[in-house]
Image (cartoon, rainbow, N blue to C red; front, side):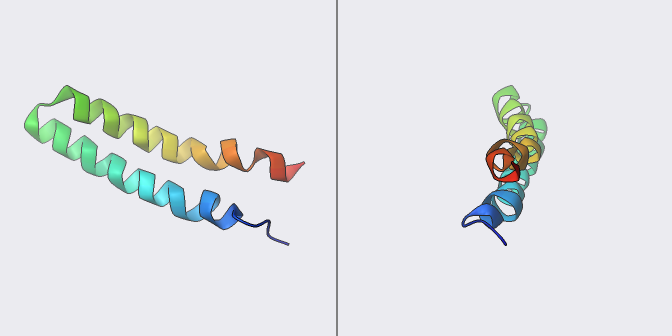
Length: 60
């Protein structure tokens, strides 16, 4: 049985963070803006790690 809110943290938020991460990465590289590129990389990595961070208590 799904725990309330687990769908948001496992499927919805990582996609949103990953999408904006890619957008910031592309925008930062095209504009030679290091801060946008770093923000994009951080968001993309955060999108990959988010399900493991937030859903860990529900596994046990």
